[in-house]
Length: 374
Image 1 (spheres, rainbow, N blue to C red):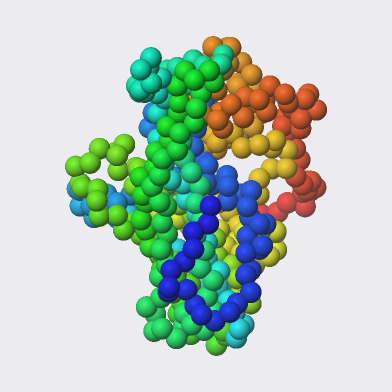
Image 2 (image 1 turned 60 degrees about the horizontal axis):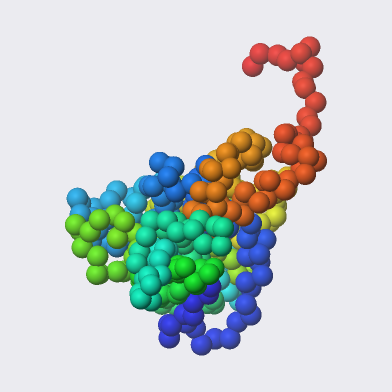
């Protein structure tokens, strides 16, 4: 779902460089749903009762109930803001394209239809041979800003702000046989992202880009239970930065000109890495999970298992070992859990064989006779 920017968007017409982001979509989606639902994918599992561990931007008054949060790189630390700083070289006509992505919590309630036609919330309902359980789902959102670099530089460092909003809403889904319904409710989420740029004194056309995303909700107080505060939070928040006429520098292995400036970058609750194809420098993924430059999803992986630091073979085998009753509960917990079960159950032997191990590269071992002390 893509939200429109407000009146702060530039009037200057620019080409949409969005397709560049497609090269990082698989990794970005893995970040978006990292930890969404953990094996064994059942609501009753203890680790699925405390969720949303990465990239959480909650209302500030709730976050700072015990004092200001110390800015760190760790995206597992709950905060109300997230800041990305990255370095780039740019052409005179460079255009910056920023995309902020996050999940919005969605409460799914199961309601039984009573004889008089009214509905009663229940903890479990069977309909059409399937079981339905209440559970917190999530809705993906992304918001874009495209602006010429020259306009960012001309505003004296104030930056270009744009709203990152997810509206509230409610939908109902009738269950088979008229026995009840699912009601999905979302609370509004309000945030702002600000993009700014500053030139660097390098003797070359080099710049520092800063993207700061802040939860601006004021309705949630400091004593609000976590479950309620999360309904007004951005979850798994991460940022893609690209555009036209830009060449980004790695912060992990910066070129010589960028080294002193890379040390001065201040990234809060997220860390930017080069994304896209190896060797390319036109795309950055700033993630609450620290990645290496040019991260990729293993081509052998048949699909996302949502589990932190997942090992596809082990998780797939463990999923196959779930009892029929455990699988039934997992299917009743979440649609994505049901999709994982279907995929694993239908996985052919040759796919399992590919998951067992892959050699990415072969390097000859050094000749022991050539080894010398230095």
